[in-house]
Length: 341
Image 1 (cartoon, rainbow, N blue to C red):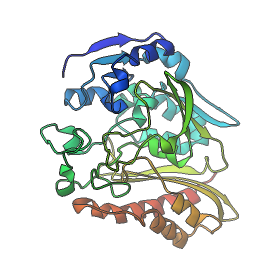
Image 2: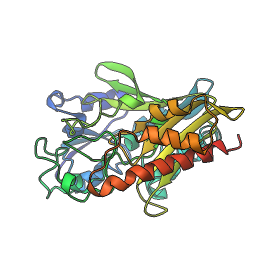
Image 3: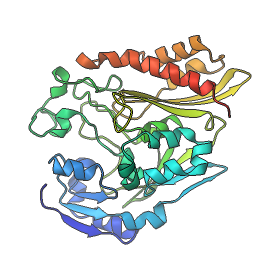
Image 4: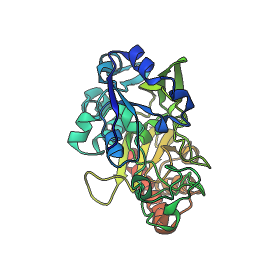
């Protein structure tokens, strides 16, 4: 690990002041910025040890939990502070009852120890687990060194993306919670030197295109302060299904976040997200449209799955994930339909 300076922010104003130093404006993307926020540190510290991220300054924002760590629900929806810990949100009784998809996406992630440390804001910004990204001895990685190539294209790529990838990068997004937020149409609250702004969670992460090193639409120095999941008749009939190589402490090969509003056996509305398969947290509007107004039977579930994966493209070992993704979504839809709410 390289030397760095540690700063402790007492409040949001001080955090923004510390993170918006004179060098920050020249950073090409927030993930390469020389000043980084530190909350749980469960991703950032790992990447610093691997010499993948090399911040010069860490700004500890844990004191902001009083401002931005609350979990509450009201008629408008579920409000999650970015400094809330994963374990606290997963164990919240209202979240478990009214937004089970959110609770399950958190509960199925990482280990209990990591969930106790990791913040919700940090969790959505975790970076890919692609071996070539996380090992600096591989020089060809466009995420680390723009223009150097993508070693994963012809390498070990079994777990990588089949949706949203590009000729420059086939890395996948590894998280679970972010997939649930995308599916449920959440928004994200952001504070920066220019003030507060609200962004659709679907727009927080960027597809790789020809700039895979720019992973989000955050500006350098901006801070995520919270998330809002809109209330809706589909939130209680929701689940997160995660398929992985082993049953615990493992990232998804495929996952499906499904929420349904069903009346008389007919789908009035659906919210569908896919994980493990895509370059970013993925919402499938195509699958949602395929279900709307139809009775949810096995044929309808298969039609939705076909729509969701219609544009998937496999690379080498990852090709099997296309069919696995279809089967995962079919299973999740039928399980959600059978829920008693």
